[in-house]
Image 1 (spheres, one colour):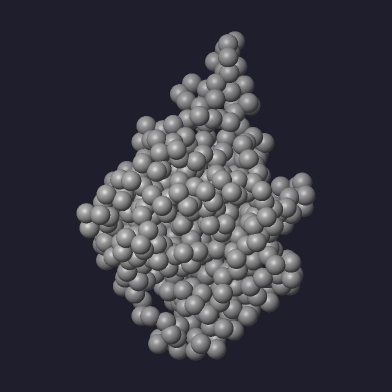
Image 2: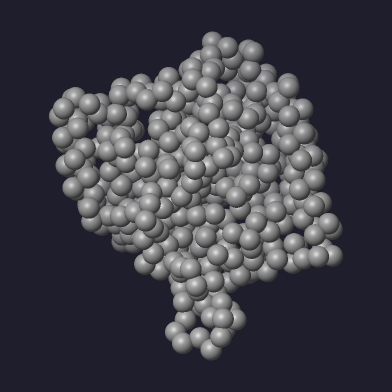
Length: 494
């Protein structure tokens, strides 16, 4: 059921929040073999009882009693936040992330914390220290990453919706692999306070749901400026609190005329560089079919070229790794996190605590980032990468003077098998070509299902808009989803 359908059932007293929560807990147990959850909240039934009391009083809000999952890099004062790393094993923060606090204020029910790539570094959820999450469409394939646990849980019906984080594609790529809708909002629309930092200028918390409307519902609940995060900003008129299930409709319609009445005025661009030889033929065709659907609906659809995207992946990995090396320096065995026993010196404490606490992918990116920031290399690498990011922003700004949204695949390929994960990390990094451009430019971007491969694996259509056009791309995605039956996984992981 969609979030809106659950809201209606709860408010009509056709189901209680406790019954709804128990149904999800039973499903989590039934499909534990997917290994989507790192921690199941043993207090969620008590939270559901509190939510039911609020419903009975007639004061429910959009997420009162709705069971939600949280990526394990979002701080929760009553559950562990480990970032799927040995470094933070057992760590329980003393506060909630802002997005968590906003949902908690509505008495949402948190089912637990979801698996991820360690410190959000990866595209497979295989770098997690604890578990290897499986794709609900095929347990022998990856769910994507780094928000793989969030995407798998939503796809398999283990939670109504989930929050993830997207640095270079960590919501959109797993949403594509798992056949759901996932959105990276405009940078600054959602507070990052309490989201454990990977790359601060790129990280963005966002929703994963069964549809664009579900994503809009969740985004409307958590968005807005926050005094704890100076990069967050208000976007006027979108986020008034509502007790009705129509909040998602208000969100999408408040800034954009409803599709399809205005379709002839909508101009969409299809990125030529993201439909080349590196893209699997079935993925390319599914995206072209989706573009043709918009054309048949009355939109103007044109092929566009963004040559600078060729350099986006190396620029992204230089910038994100440089920021990661700075952000993760706090994990030194002194303040908090993993600490070795009986160090012989301060240097020994720091060196061995980090050696034991961090996994190989995290170490690799710290080394790359530290190298890029070294004296003598800073201008040649980091500064050039930031200049390219600025040039990319300018190019997108120019395109959005003409186009309402840009279409492309969310990933060059469908979910690949665990035994096909490239041994060379550079090969895996290149697969981010579709998603890193929007991240570097701080643009809203979402993935929604648009087809299936011959093996029955989902294919994601990515839609990117200009800054603060989040409602526009949600509306355009919703229009497509109403004509496209979302693929349902045949879960067979025990």
